[in-house]
Image (cartoon, rainbow, N blue to C red; front, side, top):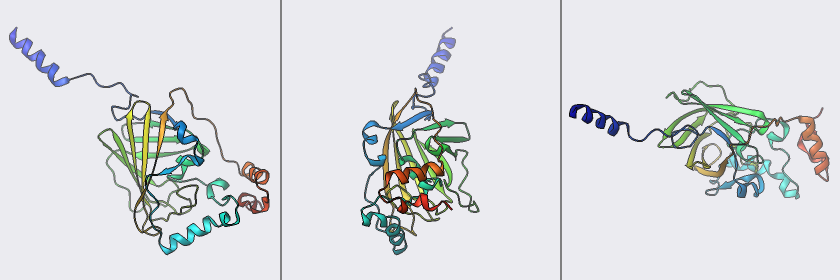
Length: 250
């Protein structure tokens, strides 16, 4: 009898408290829909930097100057590739408006579905490395691991066709991106992005932003339609002939 009680006590001590239910954010689970925090949505394009962008290389500065040359004429930026329905890329996709995104997790992969232009990406969680012979990709090739309850994602093998943000910061095919998804409690998440691109910048730099859990939301249908983009620029700009999307029409 005493032996049985001791054995039962030992089991209780080893098992500890019951595991946290899925979806609470305390057991390596980010499942669900997330949207920009309310205060962030009040900012232009919802992006803030943890620190200034690193000084640029001559090549990076030349590309940035071209990407932002319309601002010198007191006009808006219209040549962002995302405005002509190219994939925004990373981390740009998180800061193009107040679109939501959704995590879907499996044992070997995490999928993120973006309302923005109805895109998705996969993060491999099986211990693999970024392949050296991967094709250049709009969203890069991503591998992840858990650091405590933080999801850390390393991405590489990007093409050079997108921008880092809506402000014209360029990147090259040498971009290495490190994302950290930190969930301090059930309803909040902070994502930080470490930019490492030696062709464009002389050092690494960081962007970050805050997001809220949206248990009642569903991802909507938000496709990018070139004709709609062109019409938007025609209606919004005083000089629609300057709008890059309109120039795409043959």
